[in-house]
Image (cartoon, rainbow over all chains, first blue to last red; front, side):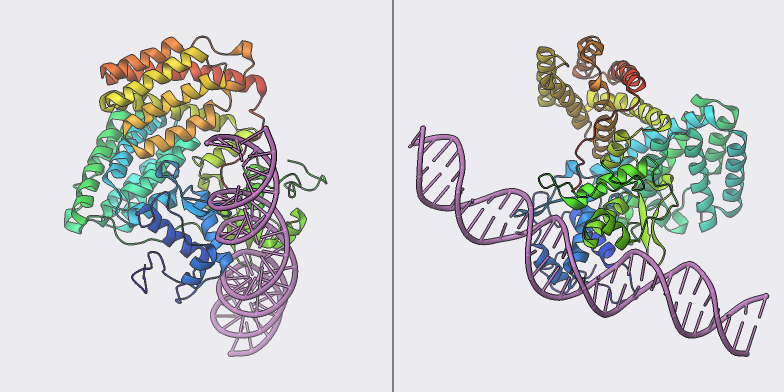
Length: 260
Length: 260
DNA sequence: CGGCGCTGAATAATCAGACAAATGCGTTGA
DNA sequence: TCAACGCATTTGTCTGATTATTCAGCGCCG
């Protein structure tokens, strides 16, 4: 995010490069500015006219960006009052974009710990459900994913894709749509944005045995075994993630927001 | 939602009554239409010009509504292609508005069961965390909430508010922001929209003993006791909710969406 | 003295119409 | 057969004006 003048807290202006939907870029930058505390809850943003002029975009593009943020609970607009940053308790922390915006800036330890805790609740339970409900075809796909992961190792994009897919199939096997939504959001937001940023020589030790244990338990149809195996796997992953977070300070590297 | 002509699947037009932000009303109606399956995933909405004319609103108002839906993952717009309903796996099921829209229409049993399951995972764990982390002041507030609930009973709005507050304080005591966000969303979406729609004579039996058990465990600092007490409480509530859902078919009664 | 309605100004909300950018698709030429 | 080109379509953006809301201040009345 580039500010031309120091008093501009969120004034990236339109990227002259190529195209990039403008309202999406503004929503992204403003969202990051809000979750990172550059605009504090209760604070009122400049008027539409002033802000859109400062950003060098039309009022309509700016307004569409604000609608996006309002949909995620970050701001609230009222005539005469203006657009106000809502209290943090109203933010949709589980929105994929909001989570991504947090991790682009410096997520608070409170948030990171909270997500870790949540993941530690959700994923083992999902594995237990999967052990009870998976069908033969899902089992086959899990095995294939793990074999692909083993062949490529997590040091490669292919290996990481296979890892992701393994977890995705487990979630799918739960047959619980909100759980699937939740777990993939958290997984995408926390785990993959950090652990794989580690330097190659700091990659976690061979994760395959832990993965195979989860698979075996699910294949055997043992929910308790699946739960504990997955808990061990997640704990190991979280240790690595925490280490990476502590080392880098934050996850850095902006990514493309899905919205827009 | 009023349709003037039968071929209009989502054409409530602007409410001539009072005021109501137009883009918010459109987002609401279109959102309900999408989650209820009137527009199916993969389907492409009419062009902005056509749809906005049909709704009798300006293109900009319609576009802002679409931005809101896109922010929640329900649709996706691209030049030349149009605005397409995204596959259900990409919807933010845990967005409070999306959840509310589901419950305005007929939520699928799959979704309802999924939410129940999720709640049964989350809330007992939250109670366990609360038992370990609550401070004296939170304990006092919990007791006051329960006493207020006892005094008014859940048959009154005051009693229900006290019930809500009790659960909210427990969540607050976990100190886990994503968990707070998640649990309040699910609680708002599932529980309160259904159970309290039951006829007075079908209200659940005295919920106070179960509530006091949860409180006692949290006060005593026993996470395991708190977990099992809360699990019992939630199970009872879910039974009542399931009964109400089965009887009414769905939760009916549209409510005001928060967005806009 | 206190509450209540009126008035005005500030701001978001909506509208209308034009132009720009992107992109899927058919056409055309090698 | 296939690649490059151009066209039509649709969303994206811009401009400027008008409308609706609502907060704050003031005066009036009880």
